[in-house]
Image 1 (cartoon, rainbow, N blue to C red):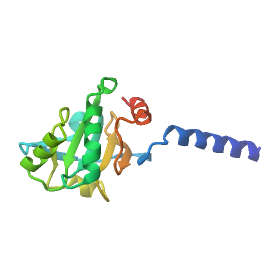
Image 2: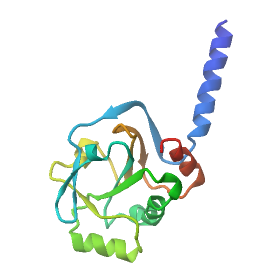
Image 3: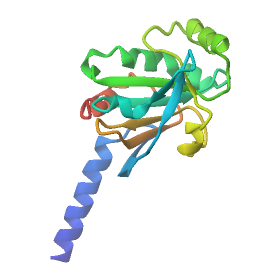
Image 4: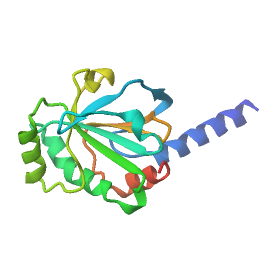
Length: 169
């Protein structure tokens, strides 16, 4: 009987690992709920993440001086335009203390067309989330719970990633 239980445990764990074999993706074992998650748009208007419940939300933290951020931003832009993920809302949040002009030039240079600029608020999300580096992306389900993080850069056009993300849409 013990052998059977161990075998089933190993089998289910190996199947789960196969389905999430995506570079830099860390799936939360426990869903995390945060209160008062706010950030700013280009006009310094405060936005609250709770206003986007019902959507799959991706917060992407970046800065203009971050080379991996620059590499992944075009694929993030295309992800926002993916028609199979029509319930996905992406917020690229600049935490590099760049001004609007510098951040806008960064988007223009990369020909970003589907994303808008956002900035970390004075009560920094970077601190709330305990970010250790950028780029970092945090994924929230439709109920507003964090269920995964991408620590480091990723190709947001990776088929495995898109297939996995579609399960949450």
